[in-house]
Length: 236
Image (tube, rainbow, N blue to C red):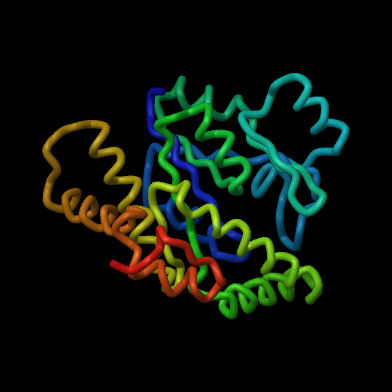
């Protein structure tokens, strides 16, 4: 493809949307794909800004017509990425950022083998629960059953961390933004192949620290707090 394809995934409430919004203010030449969904807008969300909100019938029609690069059903609602967004980014020679869940990410990786995958983790379940409650209050209601459902799903999603090239633990927002920005800068620099200037070299070093193989010590306590441990996450 003409540019890089970045996939970013995270459990609901991990702060992924905030990270993506900050990244888009800091990095140029990066297109963002607005996903389609059958769920209703929440709080201050607007049509065509957070999502393209469409009916279930229309979503099914788009599936049948092959219009999705990926799609998945989550908590009874469909979410999908339009194939058109990738084609448009390719035509413009720009990088494309997809904000999608682990199901959709797996579909995209099977179709675009060189996609750069990034997984964002909350530091622990208590922090995630607090963020979910705060978001629910902003939306006008706090439903504990819904929050507990999302916490349970978070554990299942976190088990997929090994499928991602980079991992960011979002405990301090500014540090997480720096890490995400560094990953984009580093991948662009590697693609271009030119000798990096000192600032780019610094960003490449920061990005390397976020590679799955290099973040085990940081990752271990997070996985442990969610009860997700395996031989791949053993400390060296």
